[in-house]
Image: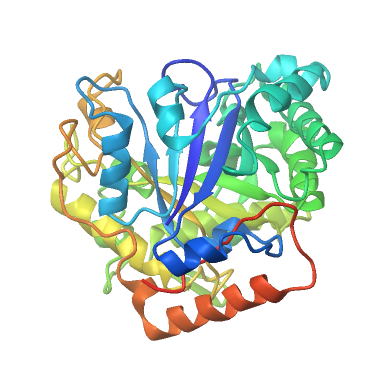
Length: 402
Protein backbone atom coordinates (compact mmCIF):
# COMPACT_ATOMS: atom_id res chain seq x y z
CA UNK A 1 0.00 0.00 0.00
CA UNK A 2 1.25 3.46 -0.83
CA UNK A 3 0.59 6.38 1.47
CA UNK A 4 0.64 10.02 0.49
CA UNK A 5 0.70 12.59 3.26
CA UNK A 6 -0.14 16.26 2.93
CA UNK A 7 0.80 18.53 5.87
CA UNK A 8 0.25 22.19 6.58
CA UNK A 9 2.69 24.25 8.60
CA UNK A 10 1.51 24.82 12.16
CA UNK A 11 -0.45 22.78 14.65
CA UNK A 12 -3.96 22.87 13.18
CA UNK A 13 -5.64 22.35 9.86
CA UNK A 14 -5.54 25.52 7.83
CA UNK A 15 -8.56 26.91 5.98
CA UNK A 16 -8.68 27.57 2.27
CA UNK A 17 -6.47 30.45 1.23
CA UNK A 18 -3.85 29.97 3.93
CA UNK A 19 -0.24 30.55 3.02
CA UNK A 20 1.43 27.65 4.78
CA UNK A 21 3.07 25.30 2.32
CA UNK A 22 2.16 21.67 2.01
CA UNK A 23 4.28 18.55 1.66
CA UNK A 24 2.98 15.43 -0.03
CA UNK A 25 4.90 12.30 0.88
CA UNK A 26 4.56 8.84 -0.58
CA UNK A 27 5.73 5.78 1.34
CA UNK A 28 5.72 2.43 -0.40
CA UNK A 29 5.10 -0.67 1.70
CA UNK A 30 5.37 -4.36 0.89
CA UNK A 31 3.02 -7.29 1.47
CA UNK A 32 5.29 -10.28 1.02
CA UNK A 33 8.68 -11.51 2.18
CA UNK A 34 9.80 -11.89 -1.43
CA UNK A 35 9.11 -8.27 -2.26
CA UNK A 36 10.91 -7.15 0.86
CA UNK A 37 13.99 -8.79 -0.60
CA UNK A 38 13.42 -7.13 -3.97
CA UNK A 39 13.12 -3.77 -2.21
CA UNK A 40 16.81 -3.11 -2.79
CA UNK A 41 16.38 -3.11 -6.59
CA UNK A 42 16.77 0.20 -8.40
CA UNK A 43 13.72 1.11 -10.45
CA UNK A 44 12.99 3.64 -13.13
CA UNK A 45 11.60 6.99 -12.00
CA UNK A 46 7.86 7.05 -12.70
CA UNK A 47 4.60 8.78 -11.81
CA UNK A 48 3.84 7.69 -8.20
CA UNK A 49 0.08 8.18 -8.63
CA UNK A 50 -0.10 6.09 -11.79
CA UNK A 51 2.06 3.38 -10.31
CA UNK A 52 0.07 3.12 -7.12
CA UNK A 53 -3.31 3.37 -8.92
CA UNK A 54 -5.19 4.02 -5.69
CA UNK A 55 -7.77 6.27 -4.05
CA UNK A 56 -6.52 8.30 -1.11
CA UNK A 57 -8.00 9.83 2.02
CA UNK A 58 -7.71 13.26 3.71
CA UNK A 59 -6.65 13.04 7.36
CA UNK A 60 -7.78 16.15 9.28
CA UNK A 61 -7.41 16.32 13.07
CA UNK A 62 -9.75 19.11 14.24
CA UNK A 63 -11.66 16.92 16.70
CA UNK A 64 -11.65 15.80 20.33
CA UNK A 65 -10.57 12.32 21.38
CA UNK A 66 -9.24 11.20 18.03
CA UNK A 67 -7.33 7.91 18.06
CA UNK A 68 -3.54 8.17 17.98
CA UNK A 69 -1.90 8.34 14.54
CA UNK A 70 -0.83 4.70 14.76
CA UNK A 71 -4.48 3.71 15.13
CA UNK A 72 -5.44 6.08 12.31
CA UNK A 73 -2.96 4.31 10.05
CA UNK A 74 -4.61 0.99 10.93
CA UNK A 75 -7.99 2.45 9.97
CA UNK A 76 -6.57 3.66 6.65
CA UNK A 77 -5.27 0.18 5.97
CA UNK A 78 -8.64 -1.33 6.91
CA UNK A 79 -10.34 0.58 4.08
CA UNK A 80 -7.43 -0.02 1.67
CA UNK A 81 -6.56 3.67 1.30
CA UNK A 82 -3.82 4.20 -1.24
CA UNK A 83 -2.66 7.60 0.02
CA UNK A 84 -3.35 9.86 2.96
CA UNK A 85 -3.21 13.65 3.04
CA UNK A 86 -2.57 15.26 6.43
CA UNK A 87 -2.89 18.91 7.38
CA UNK A 88 -0.86 19.36 10.55
CA UNK A 89 2.62 18.82 11.92
CA UNK A 90 1.66 17.00 15.11
CA UNK A 91 4.78 15.16 16.35
CA UNK A 92 2.89 11.87 16.70
CA UNK A 93 1.66 12.17 13.14
CA UNK A 94 5.15 12.94 11.89
CA UNK A 95 6.49 9.88 13.70
CA UNK A 96 3.75 7.61 12.37
CA UNK A 97 3.70 8.92 8.82
CA UNK A 98 7.14 10.51 8.40
CA UNK A 99 5.83 13.94 7.44
CA UNK A 100 7.01 17.52 7.87
CA UNK A 101 5.89 21.15 7.61
CA UNK A 102 6.91 24.10 5.45
CA UNK A 103 7.46 27.85 5.90
CA UNK A 104 5.06 30.60 4.88
CA UNK A 105 4.60 31.26 1.17
CA UNK A 106 5.54 34.99 1.14
CA UNK A 107 8.91 34.24 2.70
CA UNK A 108 9.52 31.41 0.29
CA UNK A 109 8.63 33.64 -2.65
CA UNK A 110 11.27 36.24 -1.80
CA UNK A 111 14.31 33.98 -2.35
CA UNK A 112 15.48 30.39 -2.30
CA UNK A 113 17.07 30.83 1.13
CA UNK A 114 14.04 29.60 3.06
CA UNK A 115 13.32 26.71 0.69
CA UNK A 116 17.01 25.70 0.67
CA UNK A 117 17.08 25.60 4.45
CA UNK A 118 13.78 23.77 4.75
CA UNK A 119 14.88 21.04 2.35
CA UNK A 120 18.13 20.55 4.25
CA UNK A 121 16.30 20.38 7.57
CA UNK A 122 13.06 18.61 6.74
CA UNK A 123 13.38 16.68 3.49
CA UNK A 124 16.90 15.27 3.39
CA UNK A 125 16.71 13.52 6.79
CA UNK A 126 13.69 11.54 5.54
CA UNK A 127 14.66 11.03 1.91
CA UNK A 128 14.90 8.52 0.26
CA UNK A 129 13.78 6.13 3.03
CA UNK A 130 10.47 7.97 2.88
CA UNK A 131 9.52 8.56 -0.75
CA UNK A 132 8.60 12.23 -0.78
CA UNK A 133 6.96 12.81 -4.14
CA UNK A 134 5.21 16.19 -4.06
CA UNK A 135 5.54 19.50 -2.24
CA UNK A 136 2.33 21.55 -2.32
CA UNK A 137 2.63 25.28 -1.81
CA UNK A 138 -0.41 26.48 0.11
CA UNK A 139 -4.04 25.43 0.36
CA UNK A 140 -6.35 27.07 -2.20
CA UNK A 141 -4.21 30.20 -2.24
CA UNK A 142 -6.03 31.50 -5.32
CA UNK A 143 -9.01 32.10 -3.01
CA UNK A 144 -6.91 34.66 -1.09
CA UNK A 145 -6.26 37.84 -3.08
CA UNK A 146 -3.43 38.98 -0.78
CA UNK A 147 -1.42 35.80 -1.33
CA UNK A 148 -1.99 35.27 -5.05
CA UNK A 149 1.11 37.24 -6.22
CA UNK A 150 3.40 35.09 -4.07
CA UNK A 151 2.21 31.71 -5.31
CA UNK A 152 4.16 31.08 -8.53
CA UNK A 153 7.43 32.66 -7.30
CA UNK A 154 7.26 30.44 -4.21
CA UNK A 155 6.69 27.35 -6.35
CA UNK A 156 9.57 28.30 -8.65
CA UNK A 157 11.95 28.88 -5.75
CA UNK A 158 11.10 25.53 -4.18
CA UNK A 159 11.76 23.83 -7.52
CA UNK A 160 15.09 25.65 -7.83
CA UNK A 161 16.06 24.42 -4.38
CA UNK A 162 15.20 20.86 -5.42
CA UNK A 163 17.33 21.26 -8.55
CA UNK A 164 20.33 22.16 -6.43
CA UNK A 165 19.92 18.79 -4.71
CA UNK A 166 19.27 16.92 -7.98
CA UNK A 167 15.81 15.98 -6.67
CA UNK A 168 13.66 17.95 -9.10
CA UNK A 169 12.87 14.91 -11.25
CA UNK A 170 11.59 12.84 -8.31
CA UNK A 171 10.00 15.51 -6.09
CA UNK A 172 7.42 17.73 -7.79
CA UNK A 173 6.01 21.09 -6.73
CA UNK A 174 2.37 22.15 -7.08
CA UNK A 175 -0.55 23.78 -5.23
CA UNK A 176 -4.27 23.10 -4.72
CA UNK A 177 -6.99 25.04 -6.56
CA UNK A 178 -10.67 25.34 -5.65
CA UNK A 179 -13.48 25.47 -8.18
CA UNK A 180 -14.06 29.13 -7.31
CA UNK A 181 -11.04 29.91 -9.47
CA UNK A 182 -13.35 29.39 -12.45
CA UNK A 183 -15.63 32.16 -13.69
CA UNK A 184 -17.60 29.79 -15.94
CA UNK A 185 -18.17 26.03 -15.84
CA UNK A 186 -21.34 25.50 -17.90
CA UNK A 187 -21.32 23.91 -20.33
CA UNK A 188 -17.97 22.27 -19.54
CA UNK A 189 -16.43 23.33 -22.87
CA UNK A 190 -16.96 26.97 -21.81
CA UNK A 191 -14.89 26.49 -18.68
CA UNK A 192 -12.72 29.52 -17.99
CA UNK A 193 -10.72 30.95 -15.12
CA UNK A 194 -11.57 34.25 -13.48
CA UNK A 195 -10.15 37.11 -15.56
CA UNK A 196 -8.17 38.56 -12.67
CA UNK A 197 -6.41 35.20 -12.22
CA UNK A 198 -6.13 33.71 -15.69
CA UNK A 199 -3.11 35.48 -17.15
CA UNK A 200 -1.50 36.91 -14.03
CA UNK A 201 -1.34 33.74 -11.90
CA UNK A 202 -2.85 30.61 -13.47
CA UNK A 203 -1.17 30.81 -16.87
CA UNK A 204 2.36 31.08 -15.40
CA UNK A 205 1.46 28.39 -12.85
CA UNK A 206 0.32 26.00 -15.59
CA UNK A 207 3.44 26.82 -17.58
CA UNK A 208 5.50 25.85 -14.54
CA UNK A 209 3.55 22.62 -13.97
CA UNK A 210 3.92 21.65 -17.63
CA UNK A 211 7.64 22.42 -17.75
CA UNK A 212 8.34 20.45 -14.56
CA UNK A 213 5.94 17.55 -15.37
CA UNK A 214 3.96 18.22 -12.22
CA UNK A 215 0.23 18.03 -11.39
CA UNK A 216 -2.74 20.39 -11.23
CA UNK A 217 -4.42 19.65 -7.88
CA UNK A 218 -8.16 20.45 -7.96
CA UNK A 219 -10.62 20.44 -5.03
CA UNK A 220 -14.03 19.40 -6.44
CA UNK A 221 -17.24 19.17 -4.39
CA UNK A 222 -20.40 18.39 -6.43
CA UNK A 223 -22.35 18.42 -3.15
CA UNK A 224 -22.04 22.18 -2.80
CA UNK A 225 -23.21 22.79 -6.37
CA UNK A 226 -26.26 20.59 -5.78
CA UNK A 227 -26.96 22.05 -2.33
CA UNK A 228 -27.04 25.57 -3.76
CA UNK A 229 -29.74 24.65 -6.31
CA UNK A 230 -31.45 21.33 -5.43
CA UNK A 231 -34.63 22.32 -7.27
CA UNK A 232 -32.84 22.35 -10.63
CA UNK A 233 -30.11 19.74 -10.13
CA UNK A 234 -31.16 16.16 -9.54
CA UNK A 235 -29.50 14.22 -6.75
CA UNK A 236 -28.99 11.29 -9.12
CA UNK A 237 -26.86 13.49 -11.40
CA UNK A 238 -24.58 14.30 -8.46
CA UNK A 239 -24.45 10.77 -6.98
CA UNK A 240 -23.18 8.97 -10.09
CA UNK A 241 -26.66 7.57 -10.78
CA UNK A 242 -26.96 5.08 -13.63
CA UNK A 243 -30.17 6.71 -14.87
CA UNK A 244 -30.55 10.48 -14.63
CA UNK A 245 -32.69 13.02 -16.41
CA UNK A 246 -29.92 15.60 -16.09
CA UNK A 247 -27.77 14.82 -19.12
CA UNK A 248 -25.75 17.82 -20.28
CA UNK A 249 -25.05 17.70 -24.01
CA UNK A 250 -21.93 19.69 -24.81
CA UNK A 251 -21.20 19.35 -28.51
CA UNK A 252 -20.37 15.71 -29.13
CA UNK A 253 -19.77 15.07 -25.42
CA UNK A 254 -22.49 14.02 -22.97
CA UNK A 255 -22.40 14.44 -19.20
CA UNK A 256 -24.55 12.37 -16.86
CA UNK A 257 -22.27 12.90 -13.81
CA UNK A 258 -21.70 16.33 -12.29
CA UNK A 259 -18.15 15.54 -11.18
CA UNK A 260 -17.21 14.81 -14.80
CA UNK A 261 -18.69 18.13 -15.88
CA UNK A 262 -16.82 20.06 -13.18
CA UNK A 263 -13.57 18.26 -13.90
CA UNK A 264 -13.82 18.86 -17.65
CA UNK A 265 -14.73 22.52 -17.11
CA UNK A 266 -11.40 22.98 -15.32
CA UNK A 267 -9.56 21.04 -18.03
CA UNK A 268 -11.24 23.19 -20.73
CA UNK A 269 -10.15 26.31 -18.86
CA UNK A 270 -6.59 24.97 -18.76
CA UNK A 271 -6.74 24.23 -22.49
CA UNK A 272 -7.89 27.78 -23.22
CA UNK A 273 -4.65 28.98 -21.67
CA UNK A 274 -2.68 26.49 -23.76
CA UNK A 275 -2.10 23.80 -21.13
CA UNK A 276 -4.85 21.22 -21.59
CA UNK A 277 -2.33 18.39 -21.29
CA UNK A 278 -1.25 19.05 -17.68
CA UNK A 279 -2.02 16.08 -15.40
CA UNK A 280 -4.95 16.58 -13.01
CA UNK A 281 -5.35 15.21 -9.48
CA UNK A 282 -8.62 15.50 -7.52
CA UNK A 283 -7.06 16.57 -4.25
CA UNK A 284 -10.34 16.78 -2.30
CA UNK A 285 -13.88 15.50 -2.85
CA UNK A 286 -16.50 13.85 -0.67
CA UNK A 287 -20.00 14.01 0.79
CA UNK A 288 -21.34 14.99 4.27
CA UNK A 289 -23.38 12.61 6.41
CA UNK A 290 -25.18 15.13 8.63
CA UNK A 291 -26.07 18.81 8.73
CA UNK A 292 -28.48 21.46 7.52
CA UNK A 293 -29.21 19.84 4.15
CA UNK A 294 -31.66 17.17 3.08
CA UNK A 295 -28.89 15.57 1.04
CA UNK A 296 -26.43 15.23 3.93
CA UNK A 297 -27.14 11.61 4.84
CA UNK A 298 -25.11 8.50 5.47
CA UNK A 299 -26.78 6.74 2.55
CA UNK A 300 -25.91 9.51 0.10
CA UNK A 301 -22.32 9.75 1.35
CA UNK A 302 -21.84 6.00 1.02
CA UNK A 303 -23.30 6.07 -2.51
CA UNK A 304 -21.16 9.00 -3.62
CA UNK A 305 -17.84 7.75 -2.29
CA UNK A 306 -18.37 4.09 -3.25
CA UNK A 307 -19.31 5.01 -6.82
CA UNK A 308 -16.45 7.51 -6.94
CA UNK A 309 -13.94 4.79 -6.10
CA UNK A 310 -15.39 2.38 -8.66
CA UNK A 311 -15.43 5.04 -11.37
CA UNK A 312 -11.88 6.26 -11.08
CA UNK A 313 -10.22 2.92 -10.37
CA UNK A 314 -11.85 1.56 -13.53
CA UNK A 315 -9.92 4.18 -15.54
CA UNK A 316 -13.13 5.46 -17.13
CA UNK A 317 -11.81 9.03 -17.00
CA UNK A 318 -14.06 11.86 -18.11
CA UNK A 319 -15.65 12.68 -21.48
CA UNK A 320 -12.82 15.07 -22.30
CA UNK A 321 -10.15 12.65 -21.06
CA UNK A 322 -11.59 9.14 -21.53
CA UNK A 323 -9.78 6.03 -20.27
CA UNK A 324 -7.70 8.12 -17.90
CA UNK A 325 -6.82 7.50 -14.27
CA UNK A 326 -7.46 10.61 -12.17
CA UNK A 327 -5.73 10.22 -8.79
CA UNK A 328 -8.34 11.10 -6.16
CA UNK A 329 -8.45 11.90 -2.43
CA UNK A 330 -11.67 11.49 -0.44
CA UNK A 331 -12.46 14.00 2.29
CA UNK A 332 -12.21 12.86 5.05
CA UNK A 333 -10.97 10.12 7.39
CA UNK A 334 -12.72 11.41 10.54
CA UNK A 335 -15.65 13.62 11.45
CA UNK A 336 -13.98 16.75 12.87
CA UNK A 337 -16.04 18.10 15.76
CA UNK A 338 -13.89 21.19 16.35
CA UNK A 339 -14.34 22.67 12.90
CA UNK A 340 -16.08 26.05 12.97
CA UNK A 341 -19.21 26.90 11.03
CA UNK A 342 -22.35 24.93 10.30
CA UNK A 343 -22.92 21.35 11.48
CA UNK A 344 -22.34 20.09 7.95
CA UNK A 345 -18.69 21.17 8.11
CA UNK A 346 -18.03 18.67 10.89
CA UNK A 347 -19.52 15.56 9.28
CA UNK A 348 -17.55 14.44 6.22
CA UNK A 349 -15.67 11.54 7.79
CA UNK A 350 -15.63 7.85 7.01
CA UNK A 351 -15.06 7.26 10.74
CA UNK A 352 -16.33 8.81 13.95
CA UNK A 353 -13.74 10.30 16.28
CA UNK A 354 -13.69 7.07 18.33
CA UNK A 355 -12.64 5.06 15.26
CA UNK A 356 -15.95 3.35 14.54
CA UNK A 357 -17.04 3.52 10.89
CA UNK A 358 -19.77 5.93 9.82
CA UNK A 359 -20.42 3.50 6.97
CA UNK A 360 -18.54 0.67 5.31
CA UNK A 361 -16.38 1.42 2.29
CA UNK A 362 -13.42 -0.16 0.50
CA UNK A 363 -11.23 2.40 -1.25
CA UNK A 364 -9.82 -0.31 -3.50
CA UNK A 365 -13.36 -1.42 -4.51
CA UNK A 366 -11.87 -4.76 -5.43
CA UNK A 367 -10.71 -3.32 -8.73
CA UNK A 368 -7.00 -3.94 -8.22
CA UNK A 369 -7.73 -7.59 -7.50
CA UNK A 370 -9.13 -8.29 -10.94
CA UNK A 371 -7.05 -10.35 -13.34
CA UNK A 372 -6.50 -7.50 -15.76
CA UNK A 373 -5.35 -5.13 -13.02
CA UNK A 374 -2.96 -7.81 -11.74
CA UNK A 375 -1.53 -8.28 -15.21
CA UNK A 376 -1.10 -4.53 -15.67
CA UNK A 377 0.73 -4.20 -12.36
CA UNK A 378 2.92 -7.20 -13.14
CA UNK A 379 3.92 -5.76 -16.52
CA UNK A 380 4.69 -2.33 -15.07
CA UNK A 381 6.63 -3.90 -12.20
CA UNK A 382 8.88 -5.73 -14.64
CA UNK A 383 9.33 -2.64 -16.80
CA UNK A 384 10.39 -0.62 -13.78
CA UNK A 385 12.61 -3.43 -12.52
CA UNK A 386 14.56 -3.85 -15.77
CA UNK A 387 14.19 -0.40 -17.40
CA UNK A 388 17.34 1.27 -18.68
CA UNK A 389 16.81 4.55 -16.81
CA UNK A 390 17.12 4.09 -13.06
CA UNK A 391 16.42 6.38 -10.16
CA UNK A 392 18.98 7.08 -7.47
CA UNK A 393 17.03 5.62 -4.56
CA UNK A 394 16.19 1.97 -3.78
CA UNK A 395 12.38 2.07 -4.03
CA UNK A 396 10.18 -0.71 -5.33
CA UNK A 397 6.84 0.60 -6.59
CA UNK A 398 4.68 -2.52 -6.79
CA UNK A 399 3.31 -5.49 -4.95
CA UNK A 400 3.12 -8.61 -7.07
CA UNK A 401 0.64 -10.35 -4.77
CA UNK A 402 -2.61 -9.07 -3.27
